[in-house]
Image (cartoon, rainbow, N blue to C red; front, side, top):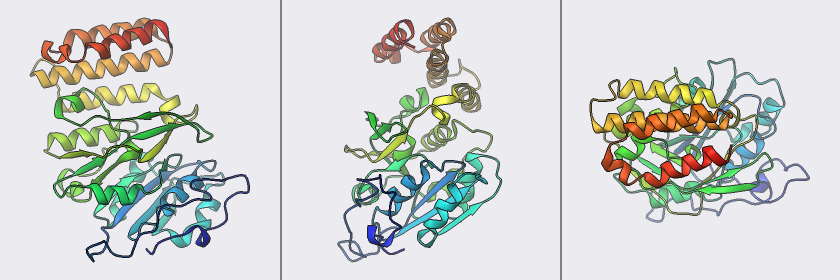
Length: 327
């Protein structure tokens, strides 16, 4: 795919300005600075009835002005304005389809199976990339890196930033305890699909976390890019993250049981189950079940090895304060 400029794309709605409506990423030469082709990046957008947001998602990807982009949209049979918006941008898509599927995880795997990039990710149809993200990924990645990730804004339905998530450097016990990676800001090498397979289609909420966990347990390397943010993760009342806390909680326990069936088998297993109960405390508190949340938090505290607890007591104190004081 050649570079895409604003003048080549359909005009944005008259009330839309700024990125990615009237601004684009910096232009890049067709080859890298040492004369090689830019590595191909494949991005999959799973979509279903997100007509209010998907055009912003599409433009934030196309207007990266990245010379070797493969963009695929897998729609689950939307019956709102989604399809008409996708058709507007069809000339710049490598592939798209709208058909009934088994959900988001199935849609992502479909797209990944059609992709041919050296680097790959998925971006949901209500999330967006920040300008120059694809260039920064390729410009900063180390030759031995399997996963590369960075900071991510939380945005609302009006695309207003509420906060910025700055994920830490990743190590095994930390990721076993819980997901600290903001999915829209995570990219990985296509070779990982050959090494560890695709997303687990039995999961509909925690499939990204399960994939990161499976990767690190199989020796994958993770590299962090320092700010500014790479992407924007939309949280609003009807999003999965905002409205279906119970599903995330159930998936987390399924994942923990899959990799650590015996909580007493090792310190790593205890950390995993402590993390699952800690997550459950957050989920239960989010839906107003404070007493249940406190019980989960106590279970988590009791499971955690002393050496790990010494370094994480502030996290437990913050969680307890949040449960007792805020919803």
